[in-house]
Length: 252
Image 1 (cartoon, rainbow, N blue to C red):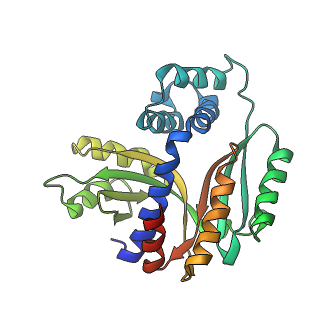
Image 2: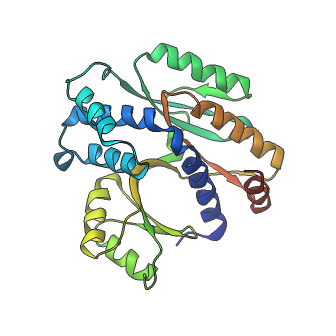
């Protein structure tokens, strides 16, 4: 299992994402539309199934989900989105990896560059920070009475999971992207409840931030980037000190 400080930073990132999910319907609909280009049946399209699962966690209405699928399969207007990965640095050397869905790459690039410039960071070239991250499947399991984390990891590792992180009220299992569906299937077969699952970019190296003001500047840059509807996700490699995390958590 990962250590406490590492887990605390992961928990902090997840809590911030959760707090913004109520405003995420437009982004989720776009995600579903793009995923549906690979087929409108979630049983035969794992990417679409993950996007729909995420939408249902947020109680997205069924008709909104169906319209998004229809756009992606060619049954409606507005499905012409391009997937782009932008890389750059926030203040204080924190690496950022941005997952983008856009219908105008040039407009989005200009808007993202403006945010980086405003906060003293910079938009980098392809490959400038992506080497610091790895693509992973993530499955989150609610803690329950009698759920033994060692047994949980044993079940999941047989199907490809390679790490388990304790995040207070949940366990987070990680695996290679290709193992995400086998891990989900193994957990379901073992009657283990799944809160949510997804693929994401996770940092291999981190940048330590010990000053509260510096942490606020990093988060302000990330928040501003996430306000752009074309930005689907911002992965970062900050590692805030425990006292900085405590102060930031108290402010929210």
